[in-house]
Length: 116
Length: 440
Image 1 (tube, each protein chain N blue to C red):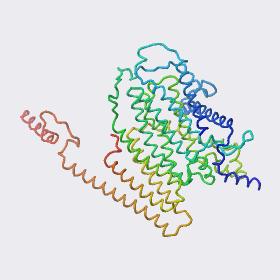
Image 2 (spheres, helix red, strand yellow):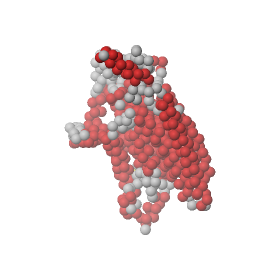
Image 3 (cartoon, rainbow over the protein chains, first blue to last red):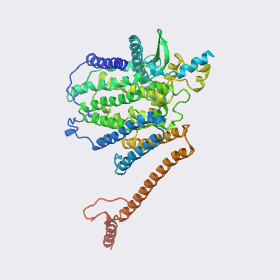
Image 4 (cartoon, each protein chain N blue to C red):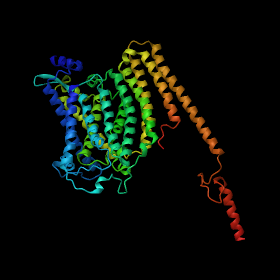
């Protein structure tokens, strides 16, 4: 763990130093346009996501990700211990993946994987 | 004979026991070397990318700063440092400043568990050329890759502006989608290696690099690693034709440079991970590995093979960017969810079945069951899918037939005077009649 801590001190120190240095080394000339957010020259729309609403597709993707990530959480220990589990492990994993495939097929048929 | 014995012990050595014995100065030196290597690779990549793509587009690319323009990356960095550090008034300031730091740190940390070479002796200490190793090293790399997304999402969120927000959302959705495919591709490697520790995975590739028996996993990993690092043709979070610059639109000066650094360090890390898991890590390529009973797999030679493999993969990143156009977002998500994920799931089962079959203590009936049961399952599933598809097609044809007829196959809008699209032929007929009347 300690080597990882040392490396994170190196990289974190470098990142913080760069950000502080960047704010000190450059020029500073006031211009009101510089304080506005960039929207290709049109009047900025500050409330771009009113009430913090985001397209629902992204929530759906996040939920699907959790399903498959949990599957991966089960797959890794199984894969590491596969030689000891033998046939029992293989059959169990086929059943498990088949179960997840049912969910997957359902989402596919209901159009959960479409982006249009 | 002596050499042979030495080679045999070197290849059978269990590397996990040699970690954690380094004196403090050695650990510090290793961290410093890795850190400097990553920063220098980034500077070199910025130059190489512009130069190689320039050549691919039949123009010279940057060639003024230093010999062949090599110092261009450094010059860009200095230029960025001397730019005004713009901060829009509307941003959420603490998060806005934190985001580049959050993006940069995990990018470097993943490299702590990448094996660069075998055990060598430095200053009288025998030590592996790897900062450290963990029993769950590959999980650690995946975790760091996920933490890196926080930097991007925070940057987009705290900018309080539409383009960065959309870029950040896209990036998050993209990284989690391709992380599933990547994770599934890696499971094949663990089936072979029986370990998540990077040094042991490299240790077990002495005879055969995993890229050969696991070619589908390797290809899925290569696609997923490009998607995971937001690089062309999957650079949708920063698609300049749609989102200006994506999540870092509102960043200037060295804060912007931090995102750039994080991106290139991530590219180097995923290339190093591909080398470690699929291309034999620091091991010499095949004909060279035979010279002098594996002499080239000892001492400092492996650093050369390792960096050669990593740089080839980095070149592939540039090559892909110079060759392929950017995908549309729906195409990109379709590739991830509908092609890579089901394919890698099935592939894992195939690998597992194959591993089980090649185990020695198996009777013929057992082997037949292993082959037969999956085939039956696949055929059953396929028959269901095919039937459902046929049913849907039939229903669609039926639905099509029950619709009112349309002009040229397209529904036409309802206009005043028209009762509906279905009436169009009648209306045309009526018009012909009236012209006849007028003519008459």
